[in-house]
Image (cartoon, rainbow, N blue to C red; front, side, top):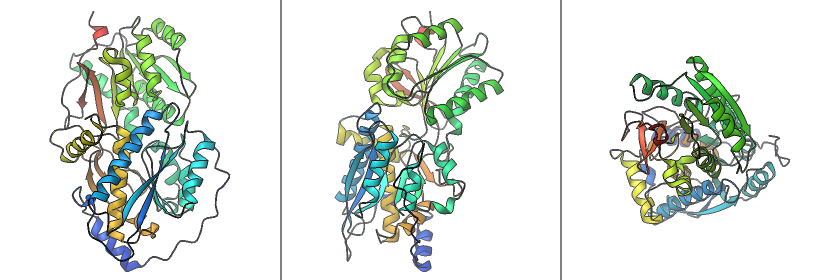
Length: 433
């Protein structure tokens, strides 16, 4: 994706007191979920701080955008009810990036970078390539992002020092390209499922997120001795008729079907049309079934579908930060189905608030960015600590875990990792005949 036309010349970095920064970073190294709630009390010069939110409130990903807004609004409400941070209170300013087109994202970024009242910007994802990272770094604006981490890593790892205010609370997506295959082989070893000829059919969407994950899965399948029975790509955007692709799937009759088109309505319609005459195949879908809207659209047709998530709530009864957010979400929105995008913006807001509490000055974006980079905190999505070379959160069962799910009895059941799982893989109903 081309860089935006309003790209600014990078301004000289403000001189930051070495003593103040050192003190802030030392204090942050062991911060926890309890401190992330931010300190109370007032102080001289307290003001209302505006946090910008980039979200696709309209278009094909509007359900994601709604979740982003809900998560951010809940965090802001809770912070203000606790007295703010050092007396500073918060206000959210949301900008719609619509269908994630270059023009829409560029306009949104410009709106927020031109507004001096905006001290930080958060998002689940804004563009499909994360080109806006460069704009926020050049404007010395704190930017916390969740999605498209392959793109974030590609931009930042070339020169991490150029992006002191930009951090991703989501880890590297490499596990997305390996885990489904590894789990399938484990189920086969456990005699829970037997592939007939170790074949897979891959459906992808024409966008960097979908493409990179599909590429990783193809690579892993081949390394594990599987054959790729077919590959198809659909345009990025609404897909209503899956007939041609499903006909090819039926002809190939693979053991495993992967669809990495993450848009909820697309994946729901794919499943509905597939089940009109299903093959004896496991079906894995990237991200979409995490959204409550997927089940609303599919109901019983979701049964048996496999999916995973790197950034949502860790739904384990023994994990306090997630249980707390789940209870708060239900009180605010009437459901325990915490939107995964809402988890991201909620966590981002709380991490920004903690860094602000440590640094003190909301105008010192560089010190706040440095403080964020040193944070080590338990959040609803797992333990957040950052890789300094990529500015991504660390991934793993003891950090942000990759969670694998299956719909069973009309519920999302966590089937991996072992540390958090609440159930085990079951053969889908269309394969039990």
